[in-house]
Image (cartoon, rainbow, N blue to C red; front, side, top):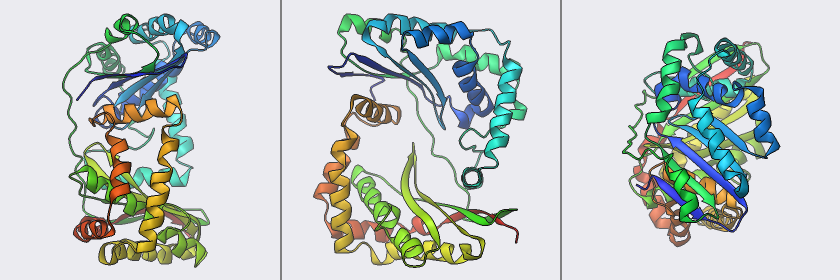
Amino acid sequence: MNNFIHLKTNDDLVYLSINYPNYGRIKNNANAMAAEFFYNESLDDEFYIKLEQRAIEITASANFFDFTFDLVCLKKELKTCLKAFKTMLNYDDFKNYDLIKDKIKNYFLIHLQEYDNLAKMRLYENYFQADFKNDKFGDYENLNKKDFKEYIKNFQNQTNKIVISANLDEAELKEIKELLNAGNSTYESLKTNESFYKEESKNISQAFVRFISSVEINSLKQRAIIGLASYVLGGGFGSRITEEIRVKRGLAYSAFAFFTAFKKNFLIQGYLQTKNKSKDEAIKIVKAEFARLISDGISEDEFKKAKEFLVGSEILKYATTQNRHLIACSECFNDLAQGELKQITQIIKDLKLCECNELLKSQTLINNLSFYVISGNE
């Protein structure tokens, strides 16, 4: 796959994303998380002030699989922006190391009180093997200064991928290409545990329910069908889960299910919030709707409405340079061909209902739902 993509624009803005595969939280959890704080907050104040004065934004993000820097600036400030980025990568003053650890700990403790996020974290930790960590939650207590320094130092030698959206010629692209460490990078499929139901008690009046299951996908067409099916299942008002749980029974304000691609893993997951006494009934409905999707498939009316929405909303995805840049990043950083995600919409447009229902009948993994629930101890 192409490690460097230049999207030609007519804008005066430059969007630049530099991605380091397999350098994120799954394989480097505590270090990646600390690096996000390190680059975003721990350099000298004067450094950030100068960036702000020139309307330059540089943001570091520790993602599940990768670590990414996103740079945004005016074209006239590109040289300054690139110089600042190089300064960040070469920064080796760790005087704020203890502060970084405290910030991570505080963030962690605060978000433990956000029960939907906590349920999501616990779901991932139990569903995926090999100490999978979700969001900003990580093994911060095992953060080691020596290992962290080595992690930061190794950015210089890591394979990376670059996507830039800007009105630049080859001469102007030359300096950006110097940041590229082209090489092969592959992602492993994450191993999952057997399906489960786990519940955690808190002194709360509501139950926070998260659920997940795996999907087998081997082609773009299958991905398009599962995306459409997940929209029918839980894509909002008119979807089966929302109708059955919220509209018909009033058990929850929101109940959703959605398709997610984690590099080599394809998932349908979702969430709902309900009263403690209603959680068992709501969960029973979720299970029933997942099973019905496989056994009965999608109706003609559901199929028509889902196609209209998914195809009709396509133009909005590409409405701005920033959106087009983010889509290109998603393709490049997930080892997809450029324009591949756009092909999915065309596939949906040409789909036949019988093709969808035939595939769904073979997707028995979808029924192997796992749940993590945080509920009141009343």
